[in-house]
Amino acid sequence: MELAEKIALYIFYAFEIWIMSYFVIVTLFVLLDLLNVRFAKRISYQNPQLKNYSFAVLVPLHQNIDFLEPILDSLLKQSYNNISFFVIADDCPAINLPYADERIQIFHPPVALHSKIKSIQLALQHIPEDKFDALAILDADNLVHPDFFKVMNAYYNKGFKAVQSTLAPKNIDTTFARLDTINDQYYNFIDRRVPSKLGLNANISGRGTVVDIKMYKSVSYNSLFGGFDKKLQCELAKQTTIGYASDAILYDEKVSDGNSMQKQRTRWINAYFRYFKEAGKVFFAGLFKGNFRVMFAGYTNMRPPLFIQLFLALVILLINVLFFPKMVPYVAIILGAYLLSFLYIVIFKNKLLSAKESINTVFKIPLFISRQVKALFNIKKANRSFLQTDNYKAVFIDDILHKN
Picture 1 (tube, rainbow, N blue to C red):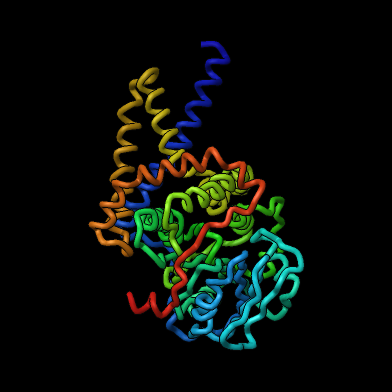
Picture 2 (picture 1 turned 90 degrees about the vertical axis):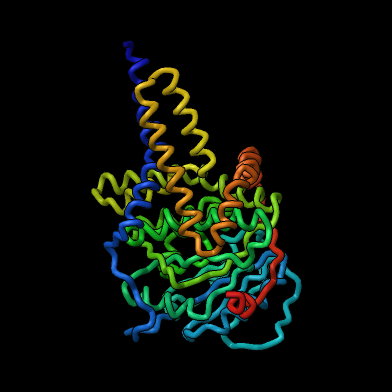
């Protein structure tokens, strides 16, 4: 075999191992869940805490103030008091709240920013670092459970400097909202719930993330359009263990239609490719330092979006059928085990939808994939503009809690 053929073969083997390993990891995580394996201790927020940490809550708005009153209402109803709220009203109309609270400050940028990262940076210029321990970043359409910051305080008392909350849907009333919900449940399981039990980093989602304020300020963004969470994830993973607070619930609006989902995924897919190199650096930093936690964080963030991952797996299977038939049974077994694991996660571990709703939604996943494919071919748009997801569900926290 000529040298060029050997090199090509080794590249294919390496690529095959990389892509297929993600399917194997999901199956392994399901087995660990079934066996109830846990290395990290549970953290109880019900016990008295040594310190009441101070939290600065940032709520960036963009051209729309319809959701401001509901989110502030949920924040003002917190069972934990050592918090202040900073609203960045970017390119928004005048704000007249029906109540006054000294903990609420509203910033009106003199020039339109059209960037979540810029909005956060502007707020940080006015927030005294010595007054607050941590920064909580929310989206305008979010609502937080009354015990949200009580839970976060417990995690900070255990030494965490970055913690991701649990995402729950405000709405599951349309096909795309339910598809978005099972997508969240899937990634919550493989990127947060199981890794945190094993003492590994949890992935952040960009909303409901609480970060040590000095640590956040150490992050430098090269791009100001999208990828906020990807860049922050890479930087945090190198510095600390990112915790997952399963009891800190953040209610998030799920996309209601295909166009909104496509716009959202355009931004997310763009961020994946833009920060792939950053994730690779984290992986090799952990590898060379012998730090498995850091290495695994980089490896996780190098994982392609699931629809791309599945497409690449089918290409790998086809190549094996044509050239390496002895490998076909192994690839087929891995994909078969993954399919069963996926169904276990989105049906049996899904507490937000009934089994019947989950099964019916699974059959509609091709709709989800078709929108992601369209988003893939429009990813350059995310480099030029701020693709804000459309929101419609301006409900209050009491409405959500009464339903549950």
